[in-house]
Length: 292
Image 1 (cartoon, rainbow, N blue to C red):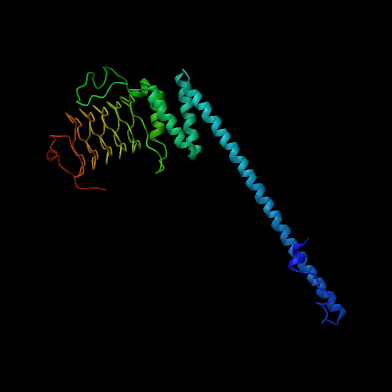
Image 2: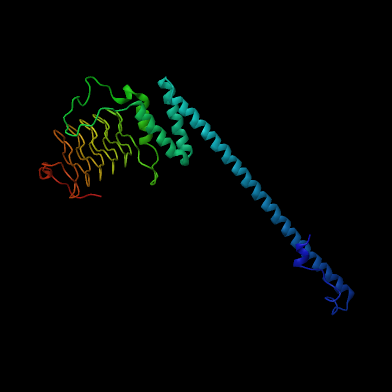
C-alpha cells in the first residue's frame, strides 16, 4: 500500500502548476496512478514468489527430515538383524546396510564402521603374534573350508566393503585381529586397509588393490597375491611363507622382518624404495621396467 506511493508519489497541485490544460493534468495523474499500480503488481508478484520459495524450502526440509528418519529406522532394524542367531537373518541385515550405504553417502562411513566391527566380532583372531615366524599352528587346518562356507555372513560383509564406493577422504578399513583365512577378496578395493596381527592365510587376493595397506605381523602364509597392488604397503614382520606374489606390485613396500620362505616372487615389480628382509638379495629377481 505504501511502497508504490513512495516510489511514485501522487502529483500535487504544485507539481501540476505549470500544466494549464485540465485534460493534460488528468492524463498525468492517471499515468502516475498507473505507475503505482505497476509497482504494486510487481511487489505482489515478488511476495508471492517468496512465499512459493519458502514453501518449497519447507517442503524440501520436511522431506529430508522424513528421509533421515527412514534411514535411521532401516539402519536400526538392520543392526538388530546382525545380532540374530540365524545366519539368514544376519545376511538380510547385511544386504539392508548395503542398500542404506548406496542410498545415503553421508551414512556410508558409519555403515563401514558397523560392518568392520561385525567382522571382527564374528570372526576374531586371538592367537598372539609370533614375530619370529615360528608358528605353533599350521597355516590352514586340515580340510578347512573357505571363509564363504565357514562364515558366509562374514564373507558377505567383506564383499560389501570391497565393492563400496571409495571417496578420497574416507577412513581406512580396520580389520586387525580378525580371522580371515581363505577369504575371497580377489580384485577388491582394499587401499589403506589396516589389518595388523590378523590371519589372512590362504586368502584369495589376486589383483586386489592394497596400496598403503598396513599389514604388520599379518599371517599371509599361502595367500594368493598374484597381480595384487601393494604399492607403499607396510608388510613389516608379515608371514608370507609359501605365498603367491607373482607379478605383484611391491614398489615402495616395506618388507622389513617379513618371512618370504617359499614365496613365489616371479615377475614382481619393485624399485629402490622397496625394503626387503635382512639377508634377502633382490638381485636374484629380475626388476621389470618402471611402470605407472
